[in-house]
Image (cartoon, rainbow, N blue to C red; front, side, top):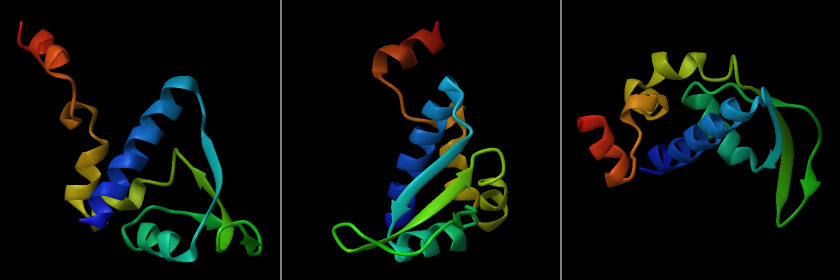
Length: 99
């Protein structure tokens, strides 16, 4: 589903940011994407008015320490996409865990 694809990408970005110490995201997106994220329990705060960039976009801020707390209560399946033990990996990495 669209939510699974979107949250898989968000999960990869979140993991990358945690590894390099980024705690807050600030970005532009369509209002419809923020509604999907908020509906699934990902807290996104609008921090400004609309901008024109390939259509109307709004600026949002996400605190990575708090943004995903509600996700587990809304959808266990989507929350599992953030579990490092369940993320897809290369076959060679999988083989290392089997040794």
